[in-house]
Length: 153
Image (cartoon, rainbow, N blue to C red; front, top):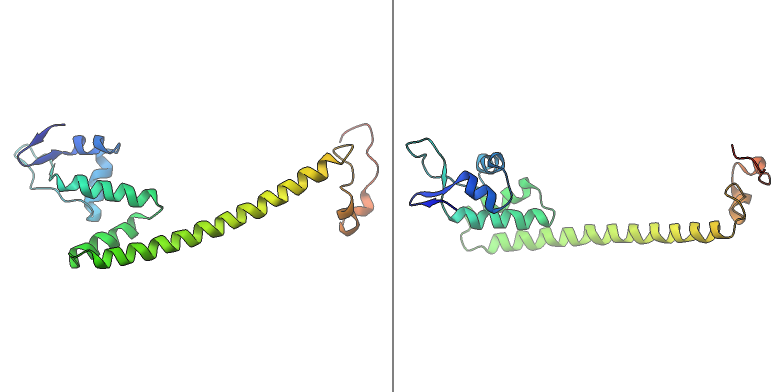
């Protein structure tokens, strides 16, 4: 990593986190990163503090927060240097994410139960086109059910 007295090069900072230089510039445009004044060669230099910022961005993105939500944290941190407001907001966001994940988990459990029921029903059939049994009585197409023929459609 090439470091100078006035910060890190954009490419070095990007490679530390597996990002592109364009992503680093985009984060800077959003106000998530800060660069020093450009050097005489018109190259951006980023203070080492951006390593902490990029690590926090990565961490929050990994937990499903959008860049807009992450920007809220960065803006709030500028206003409240104690970090208490950010901590409270992050706890609230994590509680929301936990609720979302629990809801998704319940949907997955329901889907798994349905798939298991389908497996059980299919295992009892002789043929792919056989009537599935009890559900046939309520099926709107039951009048078309016949015993399977030897030929497939």
